[in-house]
Image (tube, rainbow, N blue to C red; front, side, top):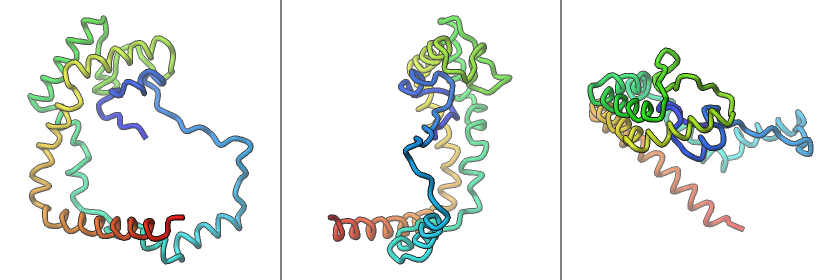
Length: 184
C-alpha cells in the first residue's frame, strides 16, 4: 500500500495514478476460486505446521502500548512545528510558480482542483507536485522532524525495542537457515 502521509511524492506512482491510489489487479477469470476444503487446508497449515509456526512473526510481540506516540498524529505534529511550516511554505511557493495551490481544507497535502481520477490533468499536476516536493526536499525534511519527535519515545523504550529486535533477528536467522538447508 502506498504511504500518502506526505501526499503524492513518488514519481512513478504519480505518472501512473496521478492522485489516485494504486489498485491491486483483480484475479483473472483463469484463477480458480479456492474451495472451502482448500481454505481449511491452508488454515490448518498456517496454524498446525511447525515450520510455518516457527516463522510466524505475529507471535513475537502482540503490540506495544506506546504505538500511538510513535505513529498516531505524528505527521500532523511534525507539520505543525516551525520547521514543518517552513517546509510547507517552500513547497507552496514552488506550487505557486506552476499556478497551483494547496487545499488544506481537504488534507494538508491536497492540491486545489485535483481528484483521485487518474486523468491527464491530475497526472500532470501530480508530477508538478512531486517535482516541487523533490525541489524543497519535502519528504526527507518532514521525515526528519518526525524522527526527532519519535526520539524521546524510542529513548524511553529502548531496552524493550532492542529485545524485540533481537527476537525478530533470531527468527529471521532461523528462517534463513531453514531456506538455505531446504532449498531445492
